[in-house]
Amino acid sequence: MSIRGSDSCAFVKEKLKRKKIAVLMGGWSAEREISLLTGKAVLQALKEEKCKVIGIDVDKNIVENLKKYKIDFVFLALHGPIGEDGRIQGLLEILGIPYTGSGPLASALAMNKIYAKRIFSEQGIPTPPWIVVNQLPVTSHQLQGLKLPVVVKPAAQGSAIGVSVVRKKEELSSAIKKAKKLDKEVLIEEYIPGKEVTVGILGERTLPIIEIVPKSKFYDYQAKYAPGGSEHLIPARLEKKVAEKTARIALQAHHALGCRAYSRVDLRVDRRRQPWVLEINTIPGMTKMSLLPDAARAVGISFNQLVLKIIKYSV
View 1: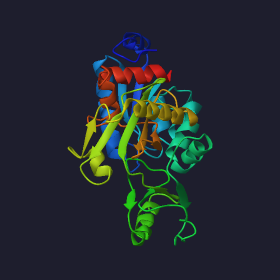
View 2: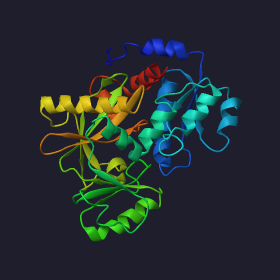
View 3: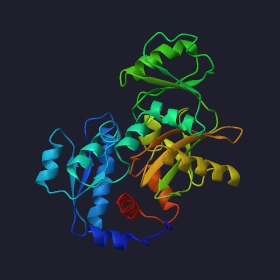
């Protein structure tokens, strides 16, 4: 099945012609502002494609708003909790409204890095060594087997919010406290030196691998979203066999969690050329600086075509 060009966009537009589409965005997570940027970009694309579409900033009245506007289909542009953790997907399932992307279970598993890593480990998908911390202090016994530096993350947040790279033991407690402000459970995983890469998945195919070169030492929130915060290299500087292995592992991780339609898999490729899966984004960013549109553009898929293809693979 080809993913190039506009092979099926006209067919998708024809199917959507009589549908009332809502782009759900905003919400109340820590990723609200990025979600609004994604939502507005998708909304503009669908308007340019002459679809009947409205944008809805999600609040507690979301059910009433979906009914009021007689919505037939939803494009999910909600990042973070509520949008990516299966809750809005479950609500739409109950209401009988089809939507883009993964279902409730896959969304919940991908959002919770701990459960995702458990599945990766069970499926033999390489992921960095890790432990879970529920409370302080962290004992030496808990850290046994982990080598500094480590990455400390809230269990269920995105956009690198609350994430720290810890290079000294004395920095660990403050990093855990920072993560615990956002989640009860904290993931500590070994930092993998090497290349930061990401693999976009559209339908059942992988898009070109992007190598991310942050201007700072760590690919944090600022590096992700500030203009000039990072450089995207397409294709990634990987040998052909390493690139093929990285793409294969990314698709395996996508399937392991039961994801559908599209996603973006974040990985590190170490100095021995071994890829390690970090996490999966089931609703990756769709802003001007976002990675998935960059990867699609590299194979001739425009932003508008990407939006239509996401819908195609979701229904």
